[in-house]
Image (cartoon, rainbow, N blue to C red; front, side, top):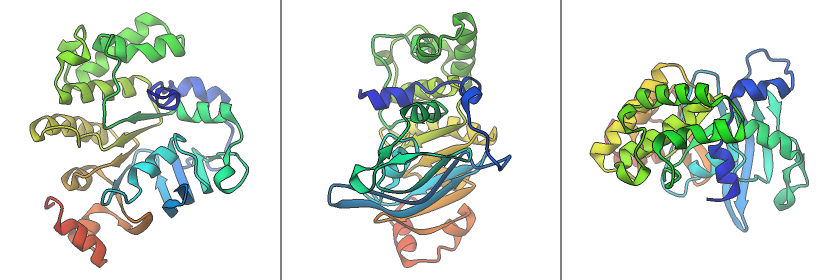
Length: 282
């Protein structure tokens, strides 16, 4: 795994990072806010002026065809990718930038680390450490990186593993689990960091339908708890069931957005109607 992905996985306890957080004028700003974001890979422009707002306790679902920019937008929100234009805010705090265009990058690496520690990302591929047991996977970052008390971390990790339904798998290794169980372990690891928001990048796309349902049940439970989440998904049922707001991306732009009942029940654009006609019915 790359250093940036490992940093994203090692999301820290927000209470730790809050000590350094800058004050903001808005007492209840969105956890994540993105304005007019542009991202290109060389000559290929992937995001062409995208906005996103994830208020506290809300679930935002990103849908669209492959190549529409969904995962890139999520990775830009977590600063795993560097954008060329636009603004990103975390709880009202703007990311500071240096340079312009392809030369633009965050000006304050400490700020990036501090913000990223509050955004736990769950990847399509589970990214569990194969040489560690499931419990060790969940405990590793809080103990080794954040220097938190091992006994307290162990208690929290056991609770989160129970929450995702694999409390009986604490002493096994990732290779001994099904794909659905591994993804639930990855979710427990993200939860153990107690982040401000959870970011899911196609969390079920690598799973068989039966295993997919195991993970979907966990995500629905988290949504019911009022957790802030941004979910990139190909599953229209999941988006309809858990999202407060759905964004349909097409070729790097927002083609349509709004509450799920309107987008799925009465899409306003031909592109969304066409996309939904080729997706699983809602």
